[in-house]
Every structure is written in structure tokens, then in C-alpha cells.
Image (cartoon, rainbow, N blue to C red; front, side):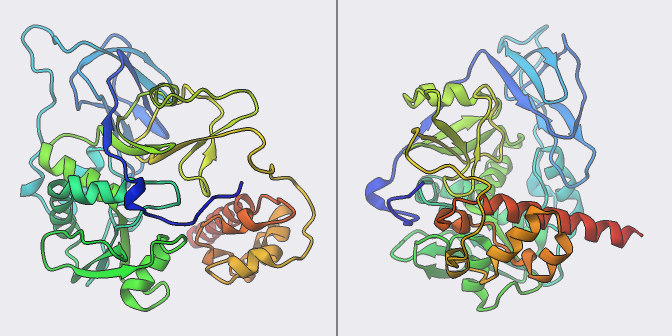
Length: 395
């Protein structure tokens, strides 16, 4: 794959938001959740369908009023029926988030479908004292186009999100990082920083460095514009996070959680042929879709169709020691060496070469002449190091 540009924003390419029509049946995705409903139950829009056993992971909700038609380990299916039954309300009771703060607000957000780490809290559900909150106002990757549209068209929701995060995190300082040349702004006493709108400047670690002048300082967290918008919409509506914002190929969509990727592709006029790839996420860090009937989750932000032959496939090739992965790595770590150790599950050696400094940008795999799956090796190395460290801590 070779992208035409690493630009993160271009006003000439900005697209309005298209509201995706609701299907007759939704498949709400589950991942580690325990179902709270069974087949045949009637649910209202916003009712909890499943709860997550992890106190920091968000619960799942029904996007519509309707009938539960199936419950599996990976999804709850709901057939839409807006008529309701016996004069009952078609919508769940609203939650007044404006009256909550701190731990009470964190518990409410979890019930409303938010992963607390995305909102700036640590895994234990607490915020650091004197926290510096940095709002990442850039598109996460090349090809994603929704950041400027959110800032210009959804300022009310974004401002409500800032207010919510202030009450949740009680930060000592809030900074907003925007692309150079942007005239967008949010309410309040935000410290605005401008950076070149070129990837990988949108990575959280680099956004934090731009805001603080330091590399990975303690007491600082970054929250994406995508999460801020979702928080603000929940604050304004009192309902769970039932939609997400996605760039599909070259257009922006407001997408109900639970619609299929196949329906999004059809709406965008895309027909994937055998040998093509459909990428969920960004073009540098996303994952290939194996099943187009997979439902959209609240965390999804991009969907791309890549034609067969447009890029060279990654292979288990030997490293040729060209050094390009090290040259283009924003963390300046020896990806070539780490990936070799990761290939043979030698994770202690990976840790010794600072694998945990990886920013997950994907540039190593992009530039690799040998087409080694470097990003996947780095992800596996960091995952296993963290798991091993957690086991040592427990012991």
C-alpha cells in the first residue's frame, strides 16, 4: 500500500455528514459482555442489552425500540418496532449527567457504553491528581476526514463533552491541539496549540508532546475528538452512545451502532470483489474485515475499500536490514530487532529494546521493503509484555 499523501486534513476534501438510515434489524456487538436480555424480550431505545464484567468497559444498548430476536456470545439482535406496546414509552429513562461528577459520573458513563480509559481515566477508574487533559483535534490517520466537520458542525456537542470531562477528571489544565491554519475553537479557557497536519503528528504521544514539550509525561492524558463528540452527545441527550462517526472511503457518515459493514459499503456504492480488502479503521493501522456482516461498534471511525493489486501483501519474509523502519519510527526504536525477537516469542528481549515505546503508528510496515508484518509483531510484543508484567505484579 502506498498512500498519496500523509496529510491529515484538507478543506478541499472535507465532506458533509450523511445520516445512515436505520435498518429493520440491528446486531449490537458484544465483546466480553454478559447479556441482560433473552430472545423474545421487548426493549426500548437506550435499554441495556448487556453489561461488561470489567468496571472500566462500557455496557451495550439497544439502538431502537423493538424485539430481541437472537442473543449470542458476540451480538444481540433487535428488530425495530417503534410502535411500542401497551402504551409504554419507546425510550429508556434519560440520565442527567449534568448533576454528576467524579466516581458517580464514571459509573454512569460505563452504564452508558463508554470505555473509561477512552475518557481519560486509568484502568482502575481514577484520574491523576492535577491532570492535564489534552484534546486531540486532528484526524487520527490519513484518509479520515471527520475532524474539521465535527469542530464546525457539532461545536455544541463538543463543548458539552469538554464540560463532562472537566467534571469527570477535574483537570488542572485543558489543551486543544488543532492543525495549523485551522480557525476552529471551543468554549472555555482552553490552551490552543497548532501542529502541522501531517501523519504521524496526530498520534496521542506526539499530540501530548506538542502540548507539553515533554515525551510521555506523567499526569497527562489525551482524548480523541471522536470520544469527545460521543461524550457530548450523551450529555445533551441523556441517552447511551448509540451512534458513531465514520469516514467510509471518502465520505463522512453518522452511523447507528449495530448496522452491518456490508450496508455501509452498499450505501457508499462500494462492491468488494474477491481479492480486494475491506479495512476497518484507518488505512495504516486498521484491520482487514473477514466478515462484511460484522456490526459497527461505537469505537469504529473508518472503513476503506482497497482494490486487489494496489499494495504488496505482508509476508513472513526475512529482514534485509535496510533500516527504513528505524528511520521512520517516531519513537526511534529498533523495530527491525524487536520484530525478530517477537517472531520467536522472545518478549523479554523485546522489552529490553524498548518495545513499549511503540506508538502503534504503522509506519514501519508501510516502509518495509521486505513486506514484513512489522505492526502486527510490535502489537503482539507490547501485548505480551504488558500481560507478563501484570502476572508478575499479581504474584
